[in-house]
Image 1 (cartoon, rainbow over the protein chains, first blue to last red):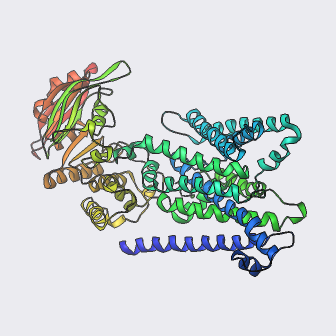
Image 2: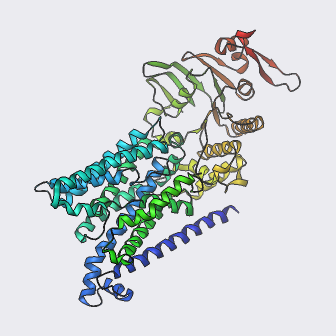
Image 3: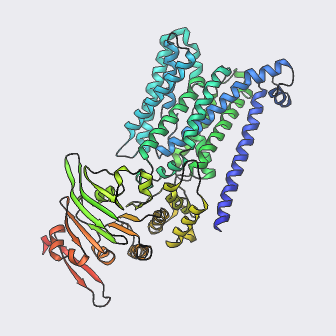
Length: 343
Length: 261
C-alpha cells in the first residue's frame, strides 16, 4: 500500500506536468500566430524554424518570439514568487501583487524612466530601480504586518494594500508631473507585453532563471518553515538566512518581471493555489509547477487579449489577468483557507 | 554525553538562567520542573542552540555546540515541541521524512537509507497504518506520535520534549511516555523532558532537576528531589511523595495550595 501511494503521487505529478505543458505549448503556438493578419498555426510553427515567407518569419521570430518568451518568463517568475511568499509568510493570501510588491517595483521603474539617469542606459536603471523599491516594499510590508513572530492574514493584507496604494499613487503622480513624455507609463502600468524586442527579453531571462533556481533549491527548507519557524530550526534549518534569501530572490524576480511588462496582477496568487489544490503543499513539486503554470496562464491570457478582444485594439494583459484573478481572490477570502490546501 | 557548564542567559536585563551545571548520561530520562517563568523552556532551547548563552557552554560528547552548524546539531538533538498544530495537508510520511533533512546534501533527494530510517521510525511509533493520511486531519495524540516519529527519523542521541503530554487525554499521555521510556531502554536514547505534571515525571524520569529563581534548586532521583518540603518551597503546594501499595509505583499526591489549608 505504501509504495502504491508514492507511485500514485508520482503519477499525479506527471499527469499535471503533462497537462500544463500541453496548455503552455498550445498557447505559445496560438500566441505566435497573432498578427495584423493572423497566421495559420502551421505557418507560425514553420516560421519558428525560419521556414516560410520573410514576413511570417519576421513576425514570428522578431515580434511575437520575444513577446512570447517574455510572457513565459514573467508568468514563471510571478508564479514561483507567489508560491514562495505564501510559504515564507505562511499565509495563503500572499503574492507579489496583493502585497504591493508589484506597485513598489512599478514605482521604481517609473522613477527610473522619469529621471532617466544620464550615461546609464534605461535598460539597466529600470530593473535596478524596480528591484530596489521592490525589496524596500517587501521589508516594509513584512515588518508592518509581523505581530509577535507571526504574520496574520489581516495585517498582511492591510499593510500590503496600504503600501501598494501609496506606490500606485506615486506612480500616478509621476505620470501626471511628467505630462506628455510619460504617455507610455499609463499603458505600462496596466501590464502589457507588446513593446518588447529581444534586447529586453534577454535581460529578463537570466534574472528570472537565477532567482527561480535559488527558490526551487530551497523547496525542502520551505516545507519545514511552513510548519513554523520553531519546527524548521529544530530540523537544522537556518531560518533567518533562508527567509532573507527567499525574500531577495522573489523581489528580484518580481522586479525583473514588472520592469519591462508593467503590473500583471494575480498570477502569483491564482497559479500556486491551483497547483496546490492539484498537487498538495510540497514545495519541491509546487515551485517548478507554479513556474510552468504561471507561464501557461500568462501566455493564454495574452492570446485571449489579442484574439478575442481585437475590436478594442490590444487589450493590456494585466486587465485580463485581474479580471480572472480578482474573482478568484474573492472566492478564496470567502472560503478562507479551507479546501485550498491550507487546512 | 550532554554537559551544560556554568550556563548564563539573560533576556534584556533580566537574568533567566544563572549558572546552570548539568551532566547527563546516555540513556537517562531527565525531567525539568519548576514554576512558570523559571527558565525551563529557555534551558531546553540552549541544548540545540535555538538560544546562545551569554556565558558558559553546552557540550555534546565533549564538543562545544557553539561552533557547530545547525544541521550538525540537528543530527544529534531532536525536539518534540509543545505545540504541534499543523495546518497543511502534508502526509504523515512527508512529516516524518522531514526528520532526515539534517542529513541531506544540497540538490539531493532522500536515499534508500533515509527512506529505511523513516519506515523504522514510523514502525517504532506505531503509525505505519496511517502513513498516507493527512497530518491536519489527525487528533492531538496521533499528531504527537508523528512528531516523535519525525524526531526518531533524525536518529538523534538526545530528544528534547517540551511538555509533550500537554493537550493529550490521560490514556494518550501514558501511551506517549511509555513509548519514550521504551525507546530510552531499548536504544539508549537520552531524553530531557520539561513538564508540570509531577506524577508523570516521578513515574518516567530517572533524574529530576528542579529550577527556581534562575538556578538549580535541587537535582537527583525523584525520591530525593520531590520531597514535601521542596514542593512546598517551589510551588507553594501541599503534596506528599509516596509508594502506592497496590502497584508498587512511586507517585506524588498533590492536595492543594498551602494558602488554603
